Length: 129
Image (cartoon, rainbow, N blue to C red; front, side, top):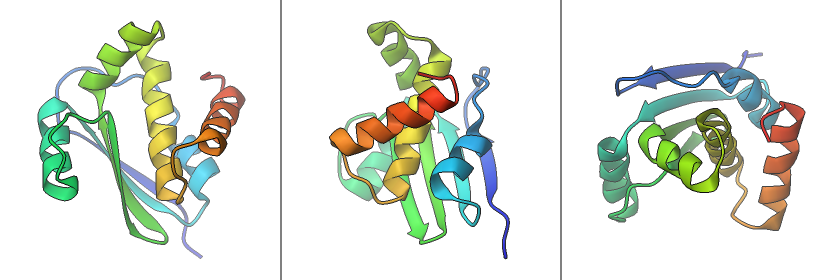
């Protein structure tokens, strides 16, 4: 039996908000999941979006399932900061939401009410709503 693991790699300068990434990922993906989180800015997020999705915009989060028990998330903190201001929330809460959103995509959920309800529930449980 494998233990879940989370590897975080920052590709940009500046502080990362204190978010319980490991606890959130374990809650959503389970104890067997190997997750890589790349904290990036606009340039890398856009490059990944262009290369793998053939889209030209700067996404806030990208999820790449690698297998049933392994995946990678690219979280664009620069876009998250702009969105936090726009939506009147903290960077910490916005980053948490985007991370949770990415984890649910790795689990196979697609956009819609069911996914949004699950996101709200887990963020509330972790006092991040």
